[in-house]
Image (cartoon, rainbow, N blue to C red; front, side, top):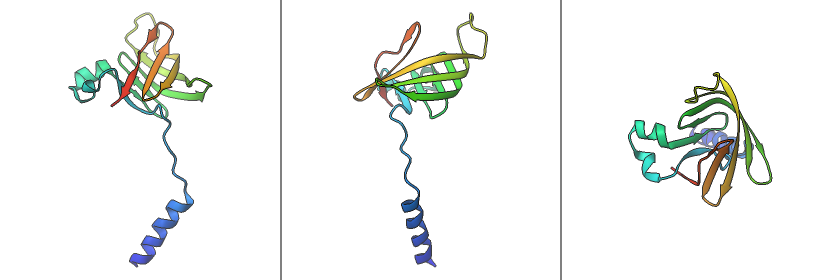
Length: 119
């Protein structure tokens, strides 16, 4: 019985290729110390990029569609909520992601995160 379970497990990993997460997926901050700070500090300093959603200081988007470009990714984020009182919620936003070595940079009109390191 053990042998059968082992054969099934090996077959499953051989048949289903591993899906690697895109390089932008993860938790990022300007300073790695913020990654282990209190929840309140993390809410103000940590950027989280998921396969389908985004959570940044003062901005959260429930849906995100990523498109690869020559210099990074363009994200069409929707169902966004944030601290800008001039925007009706939910709103949409186009976000640019650029990776440079071990850092990532997130930007949109009027905002640039600067280089962020992975938590």
